[in-house]
Image (tube, rainbow, N blue to C red):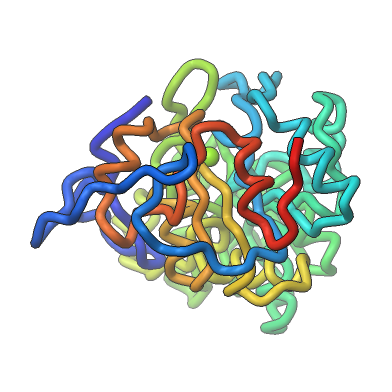
Amino acid sequence: MTGGRPCSPDLGCARPQPCSEATGAAEPPAATAGGMQTDGESLPQIKGLMFDVDGTLLLSDRSLGGYQVLPGAIEVLTALRERAFPFVLLTNGSNYPPAEQAAKLRQSGLPVEDAQMITPSSVTAHHLSRRGVRRVLVLGTRGVGHALAEAGIDTVYTGESGAAEVEAVYVGWHPECAMKDIETAAHAIWSGAKLFSASDVPFFATRQGRTIGYSFAIVGAIRRLTRAPVTVMGKPSLHALRFVAGRLGTPLSQIGVVGDDPIVEVVMARRGGATALAVTTGTTSHEEWLRQPARCRPHRVLTDLRQVLRCIAQPIST
Ligand SMILES: [Mg+2]
């Protein structure tokens, strides 16, 4: 469990103050209702659900080599599937292609179809394709660039011929990133390439506690050199939430976003007019949720993931 998280409600902006330290006027504490904490807002109709993965449905090992499925996760997804209630999973993890990630989750017992698994690379491939981008430098594992290549984008990596001659630089999961990668990205940007990142999150919840977000650190280095603006494609960007809406076939205002991180899922939901449902199994404890300022405060804090089934348009009893 962590406290003092930095806020980052804007794409690529600085992280000025901890979410748990609201600036300005003091805000009222949350009240209790029906076993769930609420800030008094009534829940809009939820006709599609987006689940975060790490800290919400499971905890990974720091090496991403294994999973511990969290209580209620299999039960909730199974109930939704049986009722044909639309749901997707959106992780900021970009190491695996979506279908490969979905297969790993199925092995852990989570009923997730390939098409229900979304990564920032899914969003990036869609975004860049629609804008006619044809060639991208990928700073990440081969899994990071997979969705882009599948979309017909020419993906190149550091050390390959013409690696700096690209229209965009896309940074994702890259534990082996070296200074040559930073240097190649900087040259690409100085030649006119735009900078995109899978994630803008400094750390996420794993079984071993905080694990750093590589793309956050790498983009920091690139921007220190180039001062280039960055477009974040994963959570909390609206690019990601709009992609989710398209996949669910649900307007933003009817999406329930379930997650463990105030500056990731809750900020995204609030900015997009969706409903934020928070869990206490990841980065944020119950007490920390209650201290959030309005922009980071969920509509509901779920003390048990199974409570999500009572928040949807056609409640499901378990
Ligand atoms: Mg999470």
